[in-house]
Length: 203
Image (cartoon, rainbow, N blue to C red; front, top):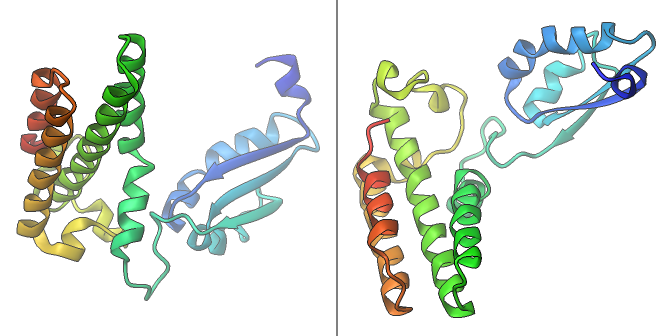
């Protein structure tokens, strides 16, 4: 541990998840607190997480943020909010990777914009398929517990549109990505191969 970290008197911790996730973080919070006498911890968490965080003795202050992926009880998921939420998750990473590659490869502004649009569609497709696999996937294949999103009350595409509707939407994302690349003259075979894997993947 660096000397600067050992001297830190106030630490902001971030756990924007549900109550159970905050509780599972308490051993790490306790270790942070005990590492330096007099240290104060502030936890930035969801509204649901804040409910339990205020009862955790290791946490001095709580900041509640309405994280879009943690749905408050009795609040129906919103389609626009769900899409915005997914755009900030893996979709943002896929867009960043694709656009960075286009820029470093010397693509023109029009091609970069087309790749950005296509990557946004592929990122959304990835999240839609992820939601589908959470419903019908096998834990051993997924590498995570199937049904975790539903158990946590998180909004998902299957909960809004059903499995068949969600599969159709993922395919439509791939089609829009192909159209964006084709119309701009971008060589798209490799990108679309990734897109097809995203839609057809099983883990």
